[in-house]
Amino acid sequence: MQTTLPTLLLAAVATLCLANDASKAPPPTSQQQQQQQQFYQPPKPEVVQKHLNKLFVEELDKDGDQYVNAAELKEYLKKFHSRLILDSIDKQWVYFDKEMQEKAPGVKVLKWETYRKLSFPDRDLEKAGEEGKQAKAMLERTERRWKLADFDNDGALDKAEFKSFLHPEEDERVRDVVVTEATELMDTDKNGIVSFDEYMEHLKRVSGPEKDKDKNWAPAQQSHFSTYMDKDKDGALNEAEMRDWVLPSHDREEGEAWRLISVGDVNQDTRLTKEEVAAQPDYFMGILPHEFWQQEGHAGTVKQKEEL
Image (cartoon, rainbow, N blue to C red; front, side, top):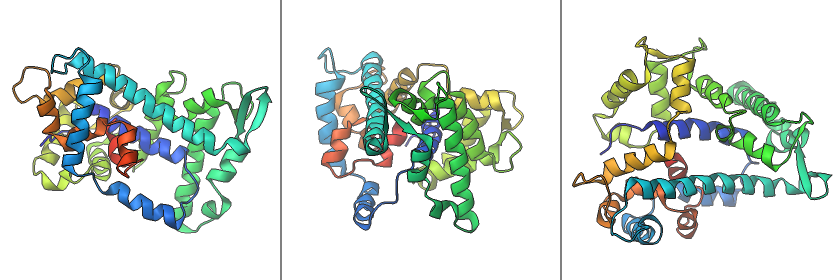
């Protein structure tokens, strides 16, 4: 079992947690809640293996040599990641379409007040106790993102600006807010840095069952923190160290490609066979396309989002 959580995965988790806050949808109906319960039931391994074999032949092994190398995997992951983002934006944009205004012929915009009213109803903001406090904090974070993405300062977002709002990590002009949000999310004592204990508490919240099943999980995270993340060895992550973690400067898809190869490459030849991929269904199912999750009744599952 892989005991370390890769940098790319953790950065994506921190980003997506906050992106989900910012793109908060109206409360689900009872029927939707029942449907959502099955999102957390992982598909059967044999079903995943069947689809991984299909993916290997049709998408991964581009040169048909029965192997997938890092370059082929990187190419697929770039397309996969781009599609995840575009699908996310399209779904949100369609949802708010009826509430938009036409700024110019064929150009619709979504006003902040409209978005706020639909996404943060007064009944949520007026709740007593911690629930109301969290709703207000979420609203503040969301409004900050909105203003950063509103490049023409007209109080409304067109679709391009809406992309920067939902996925600031993809836009150089606003991506720093992801570092700020990730720090705020983990910095429970509000001293501006993330201590090792705060880091571990965050990992426990976002990690799966491996944290309880694998006795080496916690020591591995501590080693990763002290060896790779805490560069000045002061026991905490400052702004620069958080930036290196949440917004790594290296090619994320290339890093993810090599990580996947390291997991499945049994004979250590730095490439993957169809059998090696299928042998790790729990690990590789995160790269299956969205159509798989829809067909199997798991569309929207957290597994796929967390993997990338």
